[in-house]
Length: 412
Image: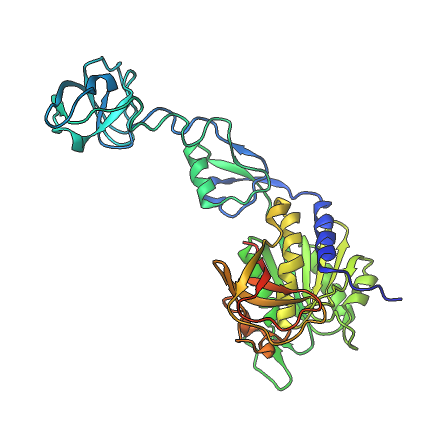
């Protein structure tokens, strides 16, 4: 007897657990400049305090605050300037009491100084300076370790390295960092109706849009991608999957997963002795999706309908692949928020339904202004500009502008 389709939450948990059980990718060291978007394979910690010394945040004068007591424009305090410090200089002496040091932005404070006067509150003198304001201890000082202290974690293992991470790591003197090897994913679109890009169109044929979109999305997330397409021939599909798995860490197919006479993928996976993780998800679109494990590799069979393929790619394949790539689990799962609809949807939802949408601020817009036909599984154009899915629970009626809905934002 055919097993019932599993719930969306169960399907997600199933693929995440399978991905977590796989061996982690090999660790490699890459130059820091090339590490953007890569996944940290070790905790990366600060090697030193940053800044490594107390420094000035402005151009002016380093002083003993006690020497400025009572100073204002009517009663300036006059002090001798005994040293000048630029960014990159190392103070050669202690600043004596009753003296000032000319200092520029970023320069270290000399020992003894406990404040900095901005030059606009002085006469700008080079040998003697007239001070027009009194200062408190520690005023206008950037303290050693104020940005980050030695030993603090900059990036956790499994965290995606952003430009901000790279900037902090550069300030710590990192020349290279350990990251997980990028996973390689095979993308196979199946269907005798498919044409390769550039082929001459013929009646009854369509161009391979699924393969191109799925491959582009995976590349955007940092995966290496190999894309192919083939006809509805079970032996050929089997050979193509095996060939891709010989070079790739996972394979994503589209087409051939439903119950049509040429929907061969479930039988192909059975013939390859794949361990089926689930076969079917109780949702629309994408219910026929199949997920499987072959050795230490994952296979995802997505619907041939373009939006169904795009939605289930985001919901299940992307989180599992990111987890297998070494990302922390919480960064793999689509973030959930509650937002206010600005447009509606005219159909009731017998089962759980996911709609493409665009979220901005606390609002979310469903394209098509309520026209349900825009949201057919075979429609792809309405996906342009969308960054999330709106979840409508089973049993929901039509939804109207102003209603609150659950939103699943695409992983970045």
